Length: 131
Image 1 (tube, rainbow, N blue to C red):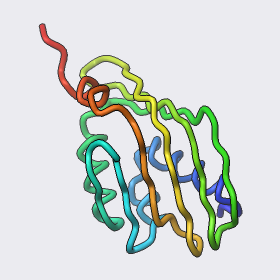
Image 2 (image 1 turned 135 degrees about the vertical axis):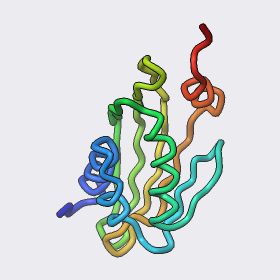
Image 3 (image 1 turned 120 degrees about the vertical axis):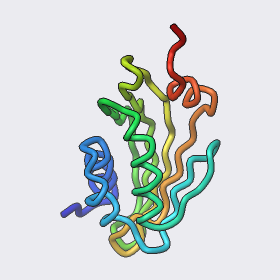
């Protein structure tokens, strides 16, 4: 059990990297908001799972690295900001998506996950290479 917002978000990211979407979904609130800023929003644990299943299904490997992270508050009302390199193996090649993330925790659950990244970079990552 995570006892700080920092360790909670690290555990959440670890669950995602392990593709344990049921564990990640158990960490979010019923009114959870998942906002991929350039791509759109999803709401609730089921939408989180559905959205990530689609993307993760394209990936043969996932390796997200937290480069910097800071947090404030506690597990009843906390905020975490991080900078990550979200690396994925997709279409037989490794690609890196630089990401800045915002996470809000209320009453021991994640209520907001907002990621900022370049839209064209993710499109390029998901597009199969031409022969």
